[in-house]
Length: 254
Image 1: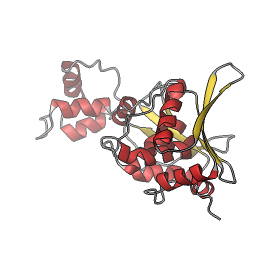
Image 2 (image 1 turned 135 degrees about the horizontal axis):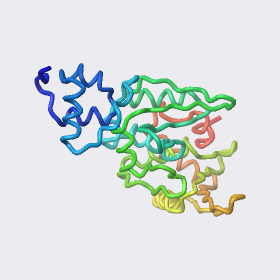
Image 3 (image 1 turned 90 degrees about the horizontal axis):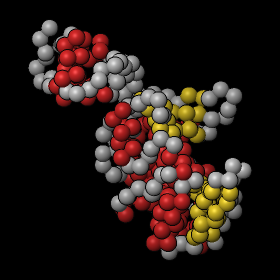
């Protein structure tokens, strides 16, 4: 079968690493499965599988450029996300399925969140080696909870990133006097504290031990004025990209 016009070796290798099936690659490229295998091995890859066909579309350029939307989603993934160690996927879990729907819409993902059995929790799973690799470059790695660093986020997008962190793993008391983010990573906690201090908020880190004697770090913003100032900063460009219940408490809306 002749190769279709415009299809390069690079195109074929990318389809393979993105886990496109041989059948779909053949339809796109015009090559037989054997010819595709030859291209893959010629380019130094060990072709051991065909990969499942992609079931859902997703914008694989989503993490290529910083935007308020990208920064918010990254904050959620860093706190509530999981990089799968056994396949080319990542996931985000939340009790609120509407929040996961917002993430899916922003990423152009056509899949749906699934409810976990025996748990009041929903999980959105995205299969894409390209996006998984880009998240790893941004610091979201396997078993990240104890090791993740605070990302090098441009100042312009820090409010949206911090909003994502608070939406993912933040606790806001009902009176709006404290906002707490808990992390197992000292480096991430220190990075978040530095941002709070740059914003001249009253903030501190409280270190505790778990039952397994691991350290956890609670980054706390306290007093009403500091919490209100935090709300003014992080919700400035939020629009609907936030957890509305937390926004209500942080901003102390009645």
